[in-house]
Length: 115
Image 1 (cartoon, rainbow, N blue to C red):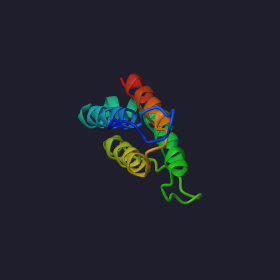
Image 2 (image 1 turned 45 degrees about the vertical axis):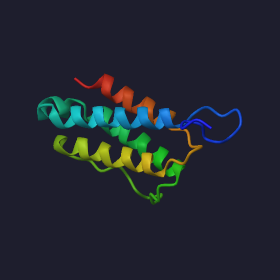
Image 3 (image 1 turned 60 degrees about the horizontal axis):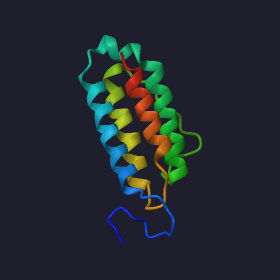
Image 4 (image 1 turned 120 degrees about the vertical axis):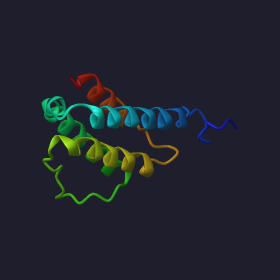
């Protein structure tokens, strides 16, 4: 069995997707934390949309997020840590058969939308 095989016959390898998601999360967080606050503020709606998707994906993956929880409204200096925590929760909760494609797609979408 290869190191990327999940052990399930005819299943796609999941570790490369996990690794790609982890790399993309680092890229997005680094970019959010290094951009000037005025530029980050311009991305507030996109950051919030990404955070909401990450909360939903986290719930799907088993992160214990209360149903009443909402994404907080933060100043731009909180955008990087917010995405870092939500993305890390998704990665930590993902099991060997869990699909992280939606998480990865949303992180890529956010990165591409950043000013």
